Image (tube, rainbow, N blue to C red; front, side, top):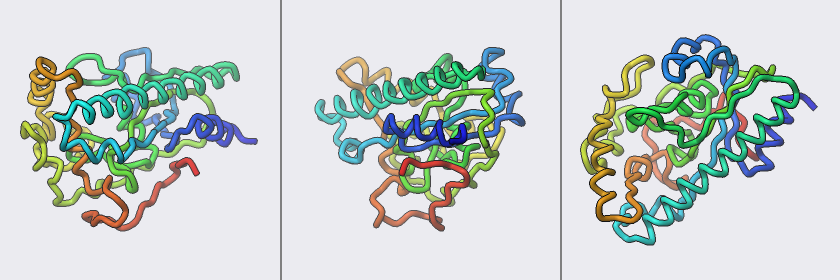
Length: 252
């Protein structure tokens, strides 16, 4: 069995829904700029994704209900993040045991100003799993942004791709329209453009800060809820022309 297949089998046995191998060689400058020397030199990023339950996400407009906010916070965030971290740790151990330098990156890895050591969205995008939407979330063709991601950097000789999916948000502004603070500016993603061009992070952070004072589980997720690509299959999706995955490897 080839190493690529072994990696996919290992991850799917952990109930991972999305696996993609990103060729990071031409993105080294951007990786090191965000994560520093600890992330330097890894030619491949393994993107790992788990879908969030519609039965929870679809109730986010009722997030003032403590039962809704608790379920989203605990299951669709904390538990799914734990599952991703365990899967990425197991993969890292397996590849390290094979003699390949490998670095797992936590699912909820935020350092300063909401930025991660390495962008899981960027790695998933390069791997062909989706595009970066106006909400700054990774949007998959079939599940929209209702997927949480983690990443593993490695020197293992995996068959990686540099195959970003072109954004398909078009003129849709549903994520911006529903944002309770107006933090989402409704701009399509442009490679290399600063996040501030699309998102007022301070408004988003302050909104969560204000909620923390009077809610046991401060959650929002309205941009994730509203995206047409995450709605049931029969819902209309602006600009949808199918669901190509490039070299992405979704769980069967």
